[in-house]
Image (cartoon, rainbow, N blue to C red):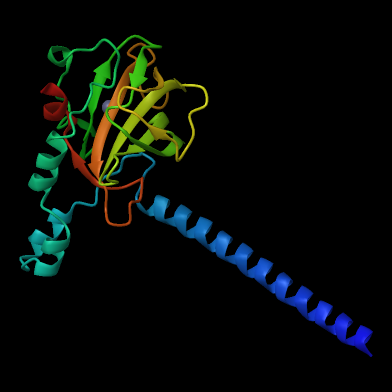
Length: 226
Ligand SMILES: [Zn+2]
């Protein structure tokens, strides 16, 4: 009698386990799919930091901003002010402030602003973290080539390093990094010219979802010039 009970219990337990596993797999697939769809929707095929979602768009409707939103998110000017105090390092070894060029507003494709600066340097020059933080994503894209997305310690900003020749060995997602830590090497992967290796460097203010692939672009030039 007891044996039968035990067998039933065992069958029931298996069913529960099977159901849990199926559910977990389903949830995982759904997450991966929505992630992929979201990336496609951002039109990231041109340049991976497709920071096209500016909160300023709402002003075109003439509708007043909702005070609650204003209270939740500091203005862009405030965010940039805060970032000024982060004391960012020029991310390419040996490059000084007077060698930087402000190419943030350059156009790179039809109707598309660069939203980054290009720091020219010989292939293989060391690329270093602009400040402390976390490696949010190691990503390869058609335009950016081999790239790194780093978040700052407050997870408010992302730093994007693109066209890398290769990563420093052992670099991994979720790894914490220190200001000046070696991340990789200058190259021309993606849509950079073979004959003009450079670091494409961008900064974005992250949205509340902390999604690594989007945010509001901030010009790195004045922040690296000080
Ligand atoms: Zn660029």
